[in-house]
Image (cartoon, rainbow, N blue to C red):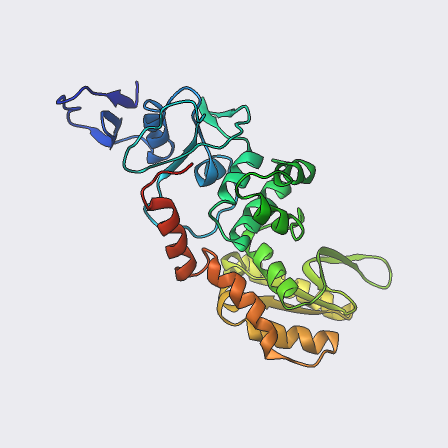
Length: 309
């Protein structure tokens, strides 16, 4: 049963159908994502493919918290006429890579999608995308460097991000916690493996503070379940017996209490505490989608006119 229906001018789709764009509807029972994209595909020119954040979502990459109401993002050849419809943003880059297929939908490859997103996202947002793509093996660092070496829009920001990207990150919040330490000028190593004096495995930590016996880790909501709490307590005891200190931080700490993380890190590395070091982190955070101001900035960039070149 087809979940998409096209109608001519003045024709009604009938009960059980939801309009997606002019002349194209999807069934009310269909999953809006990706059914809406299948509907959009009916009105796009031959060269068009989904790109930017739309493609990143199709590829299953980690995404920063995005504002509501963002348009569908597509790229097409500059030689084709550009569809002008509410809810659609069209990019016409000078170079189009061959698209890949996601359930028969044409989609930019992950690297091209990340480069396109780098036109509009902030550094932290792109870092989350890049870490995710590298961690999943969706794209190689060499290919991203090649894409970032050119003169296309988004390339300068992507080059800066690649210098700080790391495939060892296992979640977007681990990426943010690492980026916070880098901004605070604290040298860290992700996914550090710890053994005791007998060489027995003890733990693998999110971030090791170089030169110390301290781990800083992200504690998400999954750490609140009774089973996980029991495992965490056993792990903490093993680390303590091995002579290590483990500190856990939440998303609220990363976003709103960075000075606490800085104070802890300064104490561990034996550095004089200087609260002013958090300014660099706040500057990065303010531009990103992890803050209301950053989400408003992105919404304004992508919805204003909903046309691009």
